[in-house]
Amino acid sequence: MAEDSAGLPSNYQFWMQKLSVWTQASTLETQRDICLHLPQFQEFLRRMYETLKEMDSNAIIERFPTICQLLAKSCWSPFILAYDESPKILIWCLCCLIKKDPQNSRESKLNSWTRRLLSHIVSTSRFDIKEVGLFNQVLGYAPTDYYPGLLKNMVLSLVSELRENHLNGFSSQRRMSPERVRSLSRICVPLLTLPDFEPLVEALLTYHGHEPQEVLCPEFFDAVNEAFLLKKISLPTSAILCLWLRHLPSLENTMLHLLEKLISSERNSLRRIKCFMKDSLLPEAAACHPAIFRVVDEIFRSALLETDGAPEVLAGLQVFTQCFVEALEKENKQLKFALKTYFPYASPSLVMVLLQHPKDIPQGLWHQSLKHISEMLKEIVEDHGSYGGPFESWFLFVHFGGWADITAEQLLMSEAEAEPPEALLWLLAFSCSPGAGHQQRARTMVEVKTVLGCLTKLFRSPALSARDLQAAAGENLGGDPRPPACQQLVRRLLLHFLLWAPGGHTIAREVITLMAQTDAIMNEIIGFLDYTLYRWDHLCVEAHRSRKLARELLTELREQALPGQVNQ
View 1 (tube, one colour):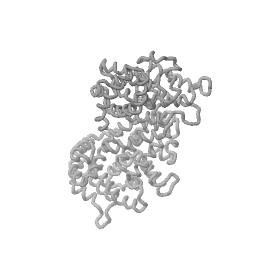
View 2: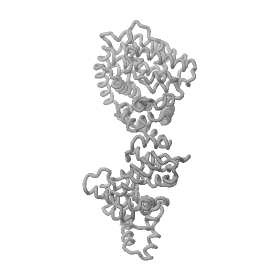
View 3: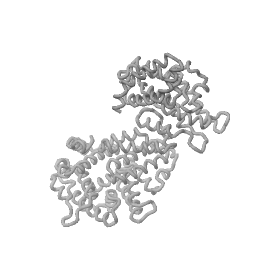
View 4: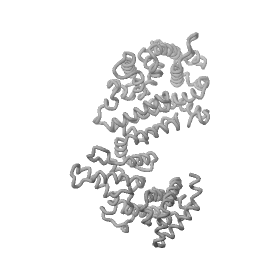
């Protein structure tokens, strides 16, 4: 790119001189010279576009004061407009001059001038597609009649024709031919980021003919999706939904774009992830159609497997599910699609229980819901039910990750003398290590039960020390070291204890300092605190002291984290 930019000035002046000669004379010798230089001029235009697309219109005018003259002379040369891809590249260059929101009269005039040239190119160029003449011949306009408002009128005419064509169905007399629709989609590729063309792009996306095969060209779908991801086009959700339903690669690219954002940005900010998610329109589109949900879900599943359950991917899945459920409640008041179509391989009764929002259930009944979830999961996992293996069951459960944290809170705040319910212990052990066998899971339950026994006794203690908690969480003497997943579960129990126990607030910082021996554990603690605050907001939990402590700890730990450890 840098080399191209550096080489442009001398070439630029050369081609300006050539264009001046070509436009001032129409001799046979001049025409031969034009034809001789057309390939080199097209290559110059292509390099010019590579430079212009990196700049805004003001910077372009400042860098190339005579750019408008160069493009105008090129656009009015029939030889240039008739040669290969030159018209398309000229359109690309002109689009770089358009200001979406002009701030003054100079920018508005530049927009009008640019649109007039675009209209002229579209009306006179072939693009190697004979049907492009519809912009001029079918609508009955001559090139000299074009003005800025005319392009909009032409687009509206085509939109009306497409909609009438859709309504007329099989009426052959008034139907637009598939070839013509395909040509329209191809013509729109270099123009679709222009605001005037957005209605036509939307009409093409929502157009449904009666042909067995897709009539719109793949390049059109690719260009629309890229423009949507780069925020260069504004389309309603219904049009984006049609795009993803008609062109699977566009949906897959959108998901990959989202995953890149999740992994490369603020891994510990759930609110930012939620902004990414809503901005992507994926939850809303998934609620509208089960096919989109299943594609998104499968990509999340693959990403979790490939990253060994990366926390940012897991957080993305949980936020996506939350936004999806909200959109589903809004979209499917009368349930257009049965829940079975969204989760075809899961137990319908388990899905129904998990979909229940905890805040819609009286807090006194949470224990009962958790026991029910645990029993259904255990039957599938350990009794080899008909709804997939351990990973599939865990994958369904972690969509609704808040239940696991509610389980930990319920166990911690139970009476000290009460025996921890086996069902809740099993659910905690399964959530932290779904791939563990029956014996390893039983061992984890014993470890957790021992830690919980110590913590519940300390929960009401007025005076606590960091050493007390260390002793409560310590590994069994003489035993094998705990598996990493079990260690992580114990750390989460300790963090829940610090936030909820009255005496935990005074020793929280000391305990966390002792716990955070590595960058990975520091990131884990920051992620836990951020997720807890996000979950409490979602559940409308009123725990002022606990909230205040969690916010303070989160702020302090983020400040302590070195750049590169945690993105703030």
